[in-house]
Image (cartoon, rainbow, N blue to C red):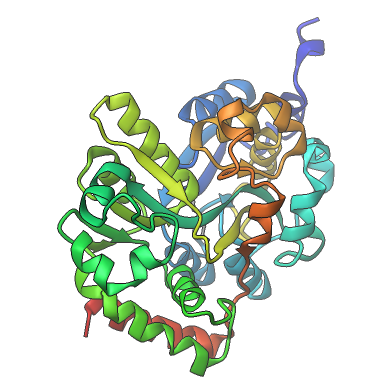
Length: 360
Ligand code: SPD
């Protein structure tokens, strides 16, 4: 009788158990409910080694060098596309992923632009890049009508000069910050034309003196603790900062706004490296993640939308009902996506970013 109660995940796990007793996963920081990791080990009997990163560039360096030692990694769509072309991933074995029936065709249609037929990846989470504010502090400095939902807040030097006193973090992510600066001046954020991309440099250098730090994960606690008042960061991370501040009852009110001028929409995809030590266990992990209740538990914890339609009935109202997480039609129309830069343009972008960060 007991066997009859086994979930699909456990059945698939047992089938692969002889080959798979360890899985190594490399995911973004602050991106999962750790109870799910324990649940995976208990349900499948597979040991899980879970490491984190906060930069696509760091992950890409490992993927392109090979022999990362990881079984599952999570690049964003544009990076995934380039890494697929470089031969970094293996095709998924659909026969080992019965929970793929839970996936959401609307998201699959969008992720197919990076991974045709979604042959190499499944969507984990998706979100937007925008502005996190400490509402009280920003209004104290810029007044009640502070442009908290506009790129004016972070790219207009007059605002940034005033905000530097309370602290501003920018993502250390050139492929996000440069498109945002281009959007601010009305240029195509997905331009691959070096002459257009060059227009982002004076915008970024103009506010550089007022940026406290370029970092892609510290801003969560820094916002929550009141150590900074503005972060240009990722939607769910800023919403997690909002909750951490509320839990601490420290009087800090954090809000997230997708910029009114338009926000980047991105997709983080789980994929199996071509040289994964344990692809069997990797498939078991992906199938576990695609379980509707597991996926809902992850989204309910990290405040990011996921690509799993069946999970929606298990999402709490604070998540499924928040247009900052699950955008309504009007919000969706104001989101843009980007495509990978060709190698030569990428080098230009990397050089520009080094210059911006050093402030010279
Ligand atoms: N803390 C998790 C943040 C995940 C952000 N994903 C990166 C998206 C890049 N476009």
